Length: 241
Image (cartoon, rainbow, N blue to C red):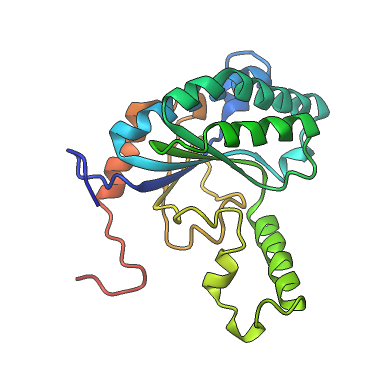
């Protein structure tokens, strides 16, 4: 792989659990949705920093299958924010060479939002500078369950031999089947858990849990995470050396 001046592989895949928007807003005496809006603005900066930092693939956790448990006003506000993000950022993403994909179960989402998601994917399908994947109504266990259902249907239809099913076979039915597995998973806000995010894909990813709340996570802090990643030895179960 080609490398930049910092020695970071240009096809690196980074996944981010963007945590801390609500706490960031509340610490300023503002409603939680104010923090989510600030977090959406931060997404733009991080996406635009990716090419110079050697990151080709960026996957962000926007809304989990568990986030429906939040209050109805907050959920409604988040859905409005997603629609606004797509509407406001579509042309900028197109011009920046960003290809957008969405992963997660779309069945529970508003039809208008789903249509906008489909439209953004189609609009940016020819881009290749950064692959941005947005996990929306996504859960790792839910994804594996849905993939298993699709695989089972193929077996039942006689198109797939059950004896031939392997880990690679199942991976081909995941939402992320067109993407490489993440090299690095970052979680902001000081929480040290993975919250049902990319469970299958992150089996050998490195993790970086940072204290900074997501709206304060600057491109400079992003670069520091990548620099720390470069110091780690990834053995994938083998012996060093």
